[in-house]
Length: 125
Image (cartoon, rainbow, N blue to C red; front, side, top):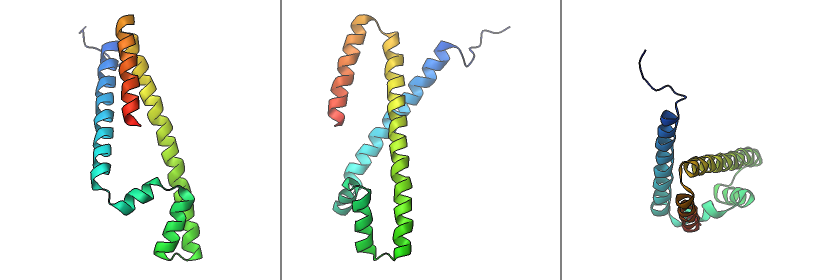
């Protein structure tokens, strides 16, 4: 028999989780940097709008027919629901990651880690 680690081995799971977390963090950072530099003023204005304001903007700028307006409205509803779902999933992943890391730390390290996470959250707002 070999001493190969299985998928259920804690070291394998922790390594996979760390790789996933690093990928998610770098992807989020990349998206944030990309969106800051590449969006023009009208795109930034659209980003800040809610669903109804965005629909009104499209109606005015694109001269949508009643049928098109209804179709766009349906698509926007689906889009905003999807974004909300993604946000909830991202929060679950963050919580899972923080809890996993916190379990590995000593009480002293955990205090420092909690402060680091608080500081990081303040910079994300």
